[in-house]
Image (cartoon, rainbow, N blue to C red; front, side, top):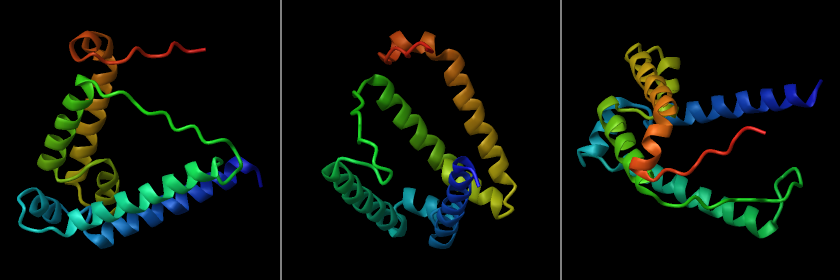
Length: 151
């Protein structure tokens, strides 16, 4: 079996496991998400906080070791903060609040058979596509970084 096929199978298994955890924890449920944004329920804040703590610890360990699990050197580049980051974060939060889902839960909801998630997916893809088309025009307005030219 080729390495690329093994990695593909591993990523599908891990993605399915991640989707299952999102589904069972309520992190992909519209009502839980709306309750979080309305401060009626703090369950998702706990889930998000747990994810931040575990991820922070994992990244710290990886950086301390200096190598990935495959032995490659670790290179974590810090991204500069600019107006585009702030505007993008605000737009992401508004979309998350209105749709009741961000990219991971969109796929989970589609997998659960919730048809309204298809509209959220269409909106996310349309927004990402529009950003790509308009990037050069938005660069000056939001002080966005220059894109690297293809090699």
